[in-house]
Length: 335
Image (cartoon, rainbow, N blue to C red):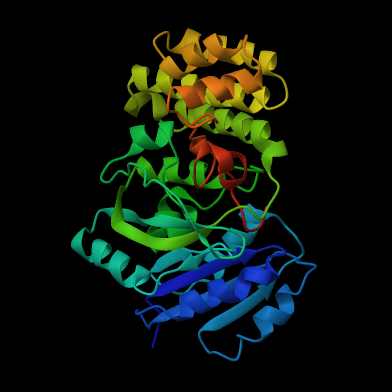
């Protein structure tokens, strides 16, 4: 029987978590699927873990020579046989009914290009973490996507024909590859989501904060290309563009503040230049004279979390609370 869904697990050195991801895919209530493990040249025990599953006729293992996350995912798309393609990072886990509930969304709407879902957060050892569910969007979402990449990558299921229409992942981009793809998809297709957590998203096990500014710079590049080369200016209201630029500058200010609070000043001013009424930038500006300890005490006294609440998700597949923001906001798996 031909598979209904091709599950692509592109991974690099996540052998310690790979079994959990594969088991969660094979354990779906939707039986007609194939699982394609794309190993992007791992140097850990990933080949051994994958070998234990290839006896299952539904599992295929492809080893590559560390060609990068975009190319690895594209290789998986090229191998896929099903009319729907689902992505699962090797350190995340699906709940059993995920695919079944998402396919029902496609059956109800022939214009649907991407179905995604809510998620729960787990730590490196699989323990649940507190997480406030964000606002999600359905329908024509290009304006919302330009401001905020709200799709959890490990929850995404894509109609196969979408890739024929808009192309696959851009292999010239080092980061934010899902943001770039979703923008292109949102120009032509609708999005929908299963309004319940169907993914366990793992965080707290990687050190990624040093690349935050690079991700933001790439996000800015993607935004400008979308505006200038991909009809973005024709479909986005000017106020949406200004707000998105202000938010990106503000997130860059927060990344700079980790190293020096005054390094945030130019970026806060840029945020206000794009959107003079942008409250978070004004609050950030007002807090600059305070030491970090004083700022945290003040926020606590006002009943706010001591760390900034930030959602730098436009350049990633995800976002989370400020305490984990730098780690949980990046494309993972093959990066």
